[in-house]
Image (cartoon, rainbow, N blue to C red; front, side, top):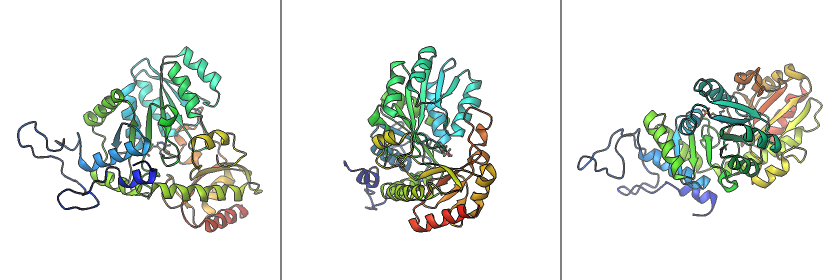
Length: 381
Ligand SMILES: Cc1ncc(COP(=O)(O)O)c(C=O)c1O
């Protein structure tokens, strides 16, 4: 199964051997009968340890990212927490990008900070400073997010991973925005990938979830232990819905990317807009790197408003099709004001988001409707 869409549709989707059902059944059972104590049928014992529907999703995620093991969780944050619990110890240091997802920063700062894990938020496009920082610290993990949420900056995965490895650190990539349909971090040397599957993998704004994907058995055993021992697993129904969403991931990402590029181009130069942040634009600082490591530029963009924070807030109330709501990755277009909504947790930190920034999750509706709606809203400011 070499093609991405074939893998997305077929991996983990073995027809039910008893009924022939093409869509494998949703297994809700929490416990599994044994013929003799300890002799498991198909490896299943108790649903926190393993469940057939979750296993099917995990097998699918391995095939999508090109890893060797995947573990699915109740949310993106639960997944990232399991990864960090598995690998960091008191005295370790973690490096994040200057514009990492606010919730991830909060977790490293507030939760792991209390456990004696230190951190620094750095501009990961400044490779010399990163190299110097890693030489002076006991860094265990460099956390890469590209494109980043919400300012859409791009990190060179291969270059940062190379530096991390030279200093004995692991390179973790949050691949939520790009998805494996557009970017596969293991091909650039990354050690681990985390996802909020709540977003594009689920794809319909109706299921919360997260995943860790790995390509080494040592890390896989540690993350599996965190999944099994602590139990923040995805429910069978959530796994089933996520698997269903993934089948159309490839075609959705193509349309998300096409719509977002058209929308970005349509609002560049609008008098109400001071800057459009979309890696598909030639003018974007990370465009060349994004073009190298992504097959298209994704469905997320943000815009800086010339009229400042008031104009930014107002814009989010003036669209008809773009719904004012947090989150992203569903088929429907959303608009939000990060500094007062999704990113309040980083206010006052080095990761604080400009107050004149509006984030747009471009859906897969008709391109011309989206352009008309956003330009009319900008005209009204
Ligand atoms: C890039 C990124 N990573 C991780 C998360 C956390 O995922 P979840 O909300 O599923 O816990 C989010 C949520 O917005 C996100 O945007």
